Length: 492
Image 1 (tube, helix red, strand yellow):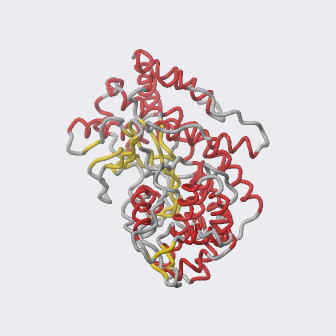
Image 2 (cartoon, one colour):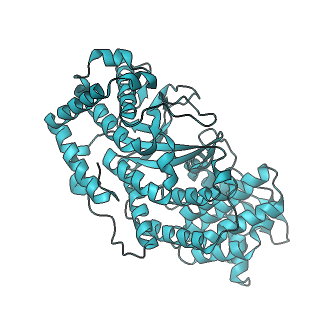
Image 3 (cartoon, helix red, strand yellow):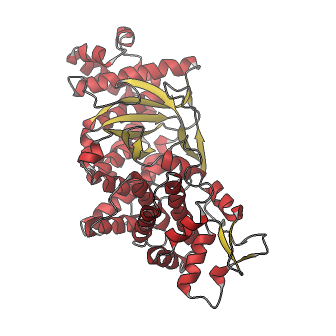
């Protein structure tokens, strides 16, 4: 059973004093919806007017929302958002408004389970903000905002909107938004509801995001969108092929200078497929504004990158970390063969950067690692429909997990994605690279001193090896076809 199916808590409680007021025939529908929202957060009332807190329901939802805890606040977030409930009085006051009642009522009419999850997400906002000792008035405003924005969606998009708007609200985004942003939320909500990709493998996560972003763009431009083009016939050469993703970094004051960025981040968070996913939302993480994208095979990842830039053109000037995963196993530093290929991938990445830029960029503020360095860290994969979150991040270089190279800048993502994927898929194509390159190029300044003619020869020879390898030639041809179908612009 998919963990997002059949979990609606029909059993109220074993406590005989608790009454299920959300089904009381004599109550108005609004009052029933109010009690329903409270019940989904473990808050119940007895017939004699006393309030109870019961963990029967919230424990089920808390287990279901394990991934969302990571999505919102990272793998080390603990129990800050979707565990337990806020004080009953705080929860009661936050929910007794028409925005919450109307939104829960709207979704209850079509899907009780979706309505229950939305109510639980709203309770998570109350829980998080109350633990931060935020005033009741500000908690109420945030919950009303999230509920009103969620009401813009329809069946199939409500949970995604509620999650993205909750992240927006607790991140400090303005709760006074105009009609333009509401229109965009509505259009992205429709794109989510129409998304026909249900990922069973990691690479399909990126395909889902491409589908949503393309549909969203069409709706914004008042164009017809007839669904994602069929690329199934082009993907078979990519069986067991590495997947690639990225996270883009802005300095912590970036949103101070560009407050509208929070709205763009909210739209991008909506565009990610998050049912069961552990891929984090775009957010402020340790004083770095991170923008996340879902991973895929390199041509889809490049299409995703180009579609992301349609929503947020600022990504053209962002530093980024590119990440690579093998479908079968994680990387580990204590594995000699892994160490060798990881260091070679780093060198190829450095040479790729040097071929497009002349200098090492000046970094603004503290970053997690130094520009040009690699690390291993926690990763999320999908195998046969099963969600897997593993790897070990130690806050420095990491011990095992996905490969990450902090080297991207500007429009360098397509080149890094292509060459690193091909090199990881078949390391033999690197056999022609002169040995002195592996010994000499350890840092970005080393790569920048290599004569441009020699750098060109290295990549030209790698490309020749790709096109003489039967499998990689198939991948290359299929990749160009996929890129031509999915990209806003043809792949160079």
